[in-house]
Amino acid sequence: MTETSLQYQLAELRPEDFTAIPSLNADIAKTKTRTSDGKVLTRIRWYDTKLLAQSLGSYFLPTSSQWSTAREYLQQNNPELEKDFISGAYEWVDSLLAFPNKDKQYSSRLRLPEIGMGKVPLLIEQSKVERSGDDFVITKGKVREVPQLPLKSGYIQAWSRDLGLPTRVGEKPNEKFERAYFWVDTDYSYHEGLRALIRGRWPSDGRVGRFLTDALWFPSASDSNVGFRPGRTGTADEDFVKMSRAEYARLTELSKELNGLLSKVRI
Image (cartoon, rainbow, N blue to C red):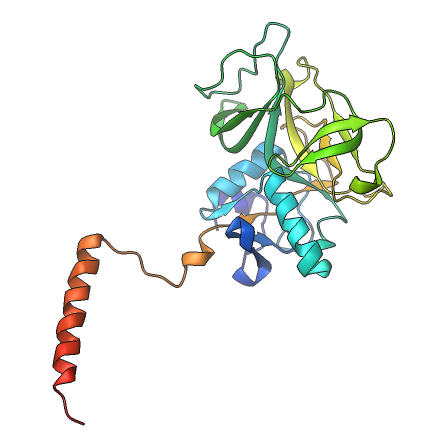
């Protein structure tokens, strides 16, 4: 148990707490992260979910696209598990939006060399968060421009599975997306334009939460209705032993010699 997980009194993560998502080549937790007393872990900042996931080694915080992919797979193959995605607390995902200011500058917290000046929102995923004094900075991550991201709130009319984001909104609910709403705030003066995405269904909202997406929250925010669920990598290779090519070649030769000897044995 790491210092970070002890700080939040995190319940032990066990292999049986995860379910395989074939298209992700990874496992996703069956439920939202819980504390040692069995309660859903909430009131945790996005920055801290990242630090927590980073401290746990083979675990990760799913991106919005990965969250959607897992939920969609479970909807089709295990509806009982899917219910946890669309009920209870909202969930932080590893998808950070960065909106530029009027001078085409992005947040100073983004310490990524590939980010320069620009006019359109950026989507930063699979990032690395580090502490910098009393603040946090992003030092690594996959950066993509998302010019198709709506810059106003509205009912979702079109969706990108690759991004895990809406690409068009409108004033009327769309039944195709279960009347889901996209909330967004692009004001740079609000935490330098950084927004950490939240997925799920707000407990007091009667709308189904399969597509509901919230880009209003800054990464230092926390709330009693916001938690997260981890993913687990490397499970597909757990039954294999990793070795050097030279060692593999040596064992192959030994195997050939052994087979040759066995072929001469009479039983």
